Image 1 (tube, rainbow, N blue to C red):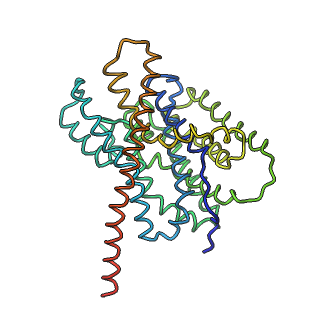
Image 2: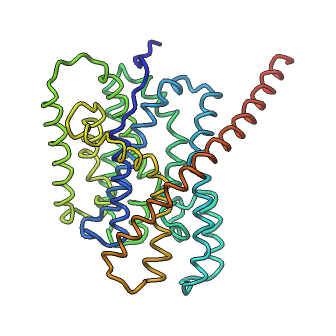
Length: 371
């Protein structure tokens, strides 16, 4: 099978910067800024689409044949990236519940703790948000990681039959759209199904994968297009996304959790992935790239900073100043976490699990030879 991915992959710096912008949108939502636009939902939706896009960009060439060893390495790499931070922030969140009146019976918190630690809490239609609340999205990401190799394999298999792949995605989208429209928006089950349920949110991830394939097929095409054209495309895609955000309060709530933004975010990601316009150039500065690199730690720690300071302590100072202080503190802590915990633990866990996986594989191969 001929591989259409050739050459060394380049860094997508502008998209790295967008990761921090998306995390910042979640922060603004949690402190009540522009709450009518529900920026937190937009930021999470962007993360899901971008995750599918970036993972396809980085791993599609390695996962094409569903080789067990390569798939195992991929799972280990992703687990090593997210779980150590998840576990740390979970335990940092536990003391918070000793300072607030409990809203439920203690047994429910024990149940929530178990589902949180095992990262299955977004699958549960009740009691799925507790401790470090933002971790529900990691439960979804774990599901996305599980299905990625299979989706990539299907993407390659059907790449010469674009109609088949298009019909599958369109059919899933139509079914999901119809379901979200029919579900009552104020129902707790509806909110879980529309916002937390991994299968529902997998549409964003799968579309990100599809966009990743599109980009990989087109990124090396020789196009004598002036930089001004790329700049115009970037401005248009960014403007369209801002426009739909402004108009979104008029959209059905079940669609505002993410689905209504998918086409606009997809266009923006593709446009900025080429990195040939002025805006992507501006986003590719060292400060924004660094903030993008620490954005996962920022996303995971900011909610705890707000929980302990903004909502629990509530110091008697100007609220806008408090928001800025919490933002700066979140950035500082995320930088510390990134350098002294996230990256060292990622490498340590990856090496430890990787060596065990390699050992297990060698034992399997030896047994095969003996048989």
